[in-house]
Image (cartoon, rainbow, N blue to C red):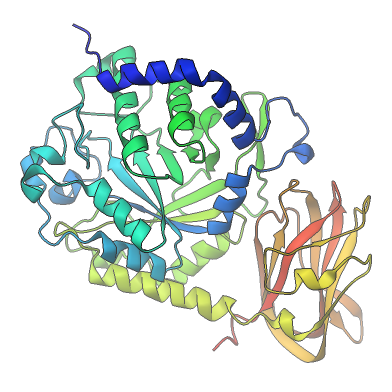
Length: 467
C-alpha cells in the first residue's frame, strides 16, 4: 500500500499556487542563464555574490557513525546507541569561527538514513534514542548555536538512504525525501546552503525538479550544492576532489547539459586526512597547519570556497586537538594575510579610473577601467623597496568574470618590469605565490579581458617576513 505523507500532500498544493512565484525566483537566483550561451555575458545572482564572499565554511558530520567507528553506516544500527553526554554545538561553532569560517552546513541525515531531528516520517531518528529522553533535536540546537554566534547555517540531507524501505521505489522515496525537506526548510529559519551529495545513488532516479521547486518555495535565497551527477540542479558545484584543491585556472561559468551556468566551486576536505566522522585514537591524522595553509591557498586562493569537515566525538564535543588546530589555522591566515603592503604605496593606473579603490582593503569598492578597455595595469609605487612573496587579486564579478590573462610584475631599476607570475583567470580571489622579491613598484598587468576589467582589491603580502 502506498504511503501518503500529509505534509507532502500540502506541498503539492503549494506548488500549484506557486508556479508564477517560482518562475520569478528561478530567474532571480539562477541568473537567467538558460537563454545565454556566451560565458562573458553571465553573472552571479546576489545570493551567489554574498556566498562567495564567505570564503570559508565547515561541514559537520555527527550521528550513529560517531558511535560505531564507521564512515558509512548500514542503516541497521539501533538508535539507542546515540547518546552524547556533553553535547555542545556552541563549542563547534566557536572553533569553526576561530578558523575564519562564516557558515556551517550540518549533516541532518547521512547515508545510513538516521535523522538528527525529530521527524514525522520515520522512527529512525533521535526521537528513538535515549538522548534527551527522545525529545532532543540536534539540528535545532546547531541552528540556534549558529544564529547566536552570527554564523550562517546550512543543511546536508543525503538522497541515498540505506534504511528507508521506500528507497526501492523511486516515486515513494521522492515523497519521503520531500517530506523531510519540507520539515527542514520550514522549521529552522533561513538556510544558506542545501547540500545534495551524489554518493551511493548510482541507478536511482530522483525527482530533483520537484526537490528544487520545494526549496525555492520555502527557502528562495538558499543555494544548492550539487556534485557531478546532480549538476543540472545546483547553484554551487563540487570542485571534483576531496583534497581541497582547485585548479590554477578556475572559471565560475561552466557548461552543463548544453547550457552555460554560473557555478562557483566549493572545495570540501576533512580536517583529518582520512575521514569525515570522528574515530577514536586518531589524532595523528589531523592535518598540519602547513597542510591547511596549502589547501587554503589552493582553494580560496583559486577563487573557490573552502569547506572543512569537522567531527564531534561521541560525547558531542569537538576534540580539543581539533579545536586547537582550527584556531592555529585561523591565526596563520591572519599572520600572513593581515599586513597588506599595498596600503603603504601610491596607486595609479595607466588607463585612469579610480585606482585607489583597488588598494583600500575594502572589497566593497572597486576600480573599473574606462569602457571598451581590454588591457590595463594597476600599479603601486613605494618610497622605499618592499619585500614580498605573494599578491591577492579580486575581480568584481557582479557583471561577470572577464579577465583572461594577466601578469604580476615588479619594477627592477636596471631592467624595468620583471614578470613574477603569469596567469589566466582571477575570479573571486586569486592568490599568487612566488619567490620573495624586493621592489619599489608592483603592478597587476591585465593582458586580456573579454569586457572592461574591474578589480575589487589588489593586495601585496610577505608570508616569509610576516610577524
